[in-house]
Every structure is written in structure tokens, then in C-alpha cells.
Image 1 (tube, helix red, strand yellow):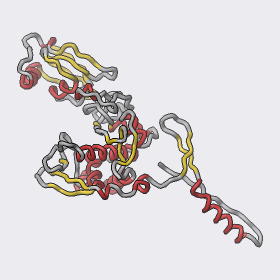
Image 2 (tube, rainbow, N blue to C red; image 1 turned 180 degrees about the vertical axis):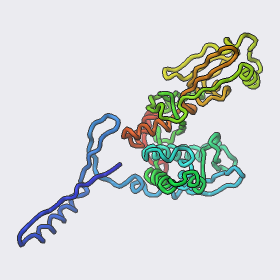
Image 3 (cartoon, rainbow, N blue to C red; image 1 turned 120 degrees about the vertical axis):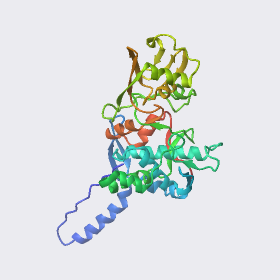
Image 4 (cartoon, rainbow, N blue to C red; image 1 turned 45 degrees about the vertical axis):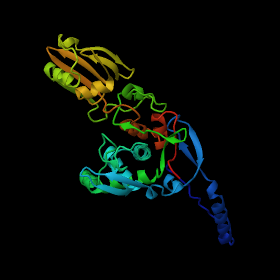
Length: 345
């Protein structure tokens, strides 16, 4: 939150000037904690007034520095990091550092929440309780030196942005009924996120589909994949040997059912029933928001967005931040019915 204070200018003349200025300054110092600032609410577009208060990092008070993370690296080493150090590497790896500060804060809080969920799981993903740096298993992570080398001339400014995003959300996460959520996130949506049940088969109260404002400003937002019928045949039979692909290719895909945003909910290939996520993985597509067309033995898949589509869209978060939303509004928008608060005392 940006805070602005108007400096009072006192002009007095005459022999009592020094005394009067001293009295006024004393009164000003006494009244300062009650000062208010005007802020435009990005959601409803109305003006609200709130007391001036310290930053989120000052309010929470160094919680990240007091919590440890054991990080399993690809070479088998386990590093001991503070939560602050770990989250810097996660945010740098998971979200473009050029994004808006409030989007980076949203990513930091979501990643912190996801990390706590992994740490507190009854059955950890790794025997020694560590979190790995594989995004397909736990979360992506990059060393500071590697990130700075990748950023080049922007290394200092980008590094500072991420440090602020972590510090200004210190210890904060996303809660549902006072418990940390599974704060899953992905790159970009085709206008709307999807319910968890469409992807993983389980309904989750806070993982519901919501509108997402990103669009063609996203790199590779629209992509196209072309496969020969033989390539599709081999991919399907390798995964589902019982599929019936004896007929013409034009009939291989059937009963395709889409959600309002154009994401595939379910369909059949060779008579095998799959959900959109399974179909996406089978065909190697960037998302389950795709259409399929066949002509002369060649399949063309037109795809929109990137990722599984559940939870927070990173490019959507950035679009919301550009429109004035802060990280709290972003997170509570993408995670239905949640609130933002400390993850531990």
C-alpha cells in the first residue's frame, strides 16, 4: 500500500513565532497516529479511508527468518534455508520478475502457503521431509546467482523487487476456515480458471472457477500443435492400449464437453473416456483449453493459455495488479472464500 502524507507548512510572523511553531509541532506529533489516507479500492472503484500503519513486514515481524526449509536439490544434496531465502528462489523461478509488485507479493504468499502445506503434510513427498526444486513435484527454485545471471542488467532491480515481495508479505498466507489452503497456481487461463474437480476429480471449496483478466499480452497465449494421425495413434495406444482407433481419424475424438471458458471438461478418444487434464497431457498441449480439427489425416489442436487452470493464474494476477488490485484482493479472488493471515505464530 502506498501511503502519502501532506507536510504542513506553518507560517507565522511576529515576536512569538518560535513559541507558536513549537506548540504546533507538538500538537502535530500528538495527532499524527490518527492521520488517514485516501485509497482507491481496485475492486469496487470506491474511495475508502484507512489509518496509516506500518508495512506488512513490520506488522508481522520477521516470521520467515525464524522458519526453516530443507531443500532437496537435483544432485541429492539437502540444503537448510530460512523460509525467506527459500521463497526468494521460488518467486524468482515461478514468476517473471518484471511483473507488478502486488502480483509478486501474491506469488510469495501463495508459495509460502503451499510450502507450509507440504511441510505439514502427514505423508511428505520425500522421506527426509525436504522439499525438492522440481516444479512437477514440489515447487521450482533457482539460486540467486543463477537468477541474477539470467536477468543481466536488471539483476539488482529485479532482485530487490522479489526481496520486497517476500518481506512485505512476511509470514502471511491464504487461509480457509483458519487453515492453510492448497495454494496451487499456474501460468495463464483462457478467460476463466477451472474447478479443481474438473482436473483432479475432487471438489475443493476454495478452488472454484473464476474470471481471469489476462489475454493476448501473454507470450504464447495462443498456440497450435499439429500431429499426424499416426503420431496421435502411437501416443494414445502407448497410454491406453485398449483404445479403438480402427475407424477413420475423423471419428477418434468424440463427445467433447467444454466449460463456459472453452476448457475441455471431458471427452473420448478411441472410446476411452478422459477428463480435460488427461487429454491435455496425452497430447502434450499447453492447456486443456483447446479445439481439435482433423483434415486429410492431420490433427490441428488450437490451444489457449498455459497450465492446469486451477487456483491463481499468474498472468491474471499481474493483470489485476496493473488495474490496481493489491495482493490480498488478488489472492482472495482466485481462492474463493479465503482470507489472508499469518500461517504460524
